[in-house]
Length: 342
Ligand code: BMA
Image 1: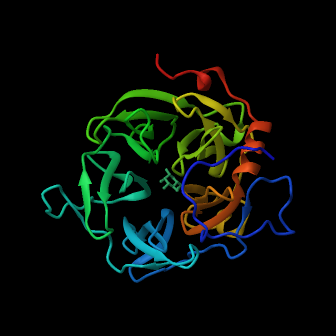
Image 2: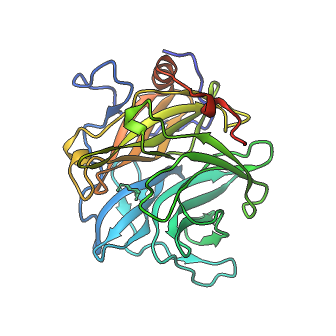
C-alpha cells in the first residue's frame, strides 16, 4: 500500500464493489461481477457499444458512447446513469454543430473521451479529415455540442485531454501513426493556450520491446488522475500474436509539472483479456480503457473499458493499491524518463 493521495473531487456515489474472494489478492485491479455492463444491441440501430467515456454529472453520471451502427459505421451517443452501471441512451446520435451553430457531423466518430476542464466538458474522438484524425467538441449543458478546431494533423486516432491546465496550458496526449490500422504508435504530449493552436510536442513513452504485452503500440486511455506521486495514467498496450493483436491495460505515473517525463511505468499489465466478454466478440482479445470515475476521499477508482469491441466492462482498484503495484513493478527506459524533445 502506498500513502499516495488523489487530488480531485469527491464522488461518494461512484460505482464500487469490493474485491471478491475469487480475485487473486496479488492482482491490483478486479472486475465488476455484473460485467459486461452494456451488452449487445443496446438500442435500435446500434449493434454494439464499447470504448466509451463517462463522468460525474449533476446527481449521477453522463457519458459519450461509441455506438457501432447496424450499418457498421461508428457514431457517438449520449447516455445517462444514476449509479454508473445501468445506462440509458438517447436514440439519436449526438448532433454536432460548428461555432456558428450550423450542423457539422463527422462522417464517422469513435473512441470518444470526455474530460471537464474549468466548467467546460470537452470531447475528443477519432474521425475522418482526409485520413483518421482527432475531432473535438465542447459542451456545458450536454444539449449543444460545438465542434472546435481539429487539434492535430492526420494520422492520429487516440487523444486524451488532461483534466486541468498545467502552467496555464491545456495538455493533451495523443498517438500519431500512419494511415494503416495503427501498426505502430507511441504516446506524445502537446499543449495549447487556447484549444486552437497546439504545439510544444513531446514524446512521453514508447511501445516497449522488453514488455512483451505492449511491444507493438501503446495509446492513452482514461484522462490522467492527479495524485501526490504524479499523473496516474491507465493506457492500452498492444502485442501481436499469430492470431492477431491483444489489447491490455497498463499503468504509468507521469511527472506532475512536466508530464512528458515518466516517473514510473509498470512492466506488467494491470488487466488483460481473460473473461468471455473480453476474449470473444467482434474483435477478440481487446480491453481498451477510456475513462475512470474516482473519489479523492476514499481513493477508489472505477475503470470503464471497452471489451472485444462489443461490450463495456467495469473494473476497480484504489489509488493506494495501484500506485504501490506500479512502483513495485516499475521499469522506466531512458527515453521515457527524458523530457521527450530531440
Ligand atoms: C484500435 C481502435 C479501437 C479498437 C481496437 C481493437 O485501432 O480501432 O477502437 O478497440 O483497434 O479493434
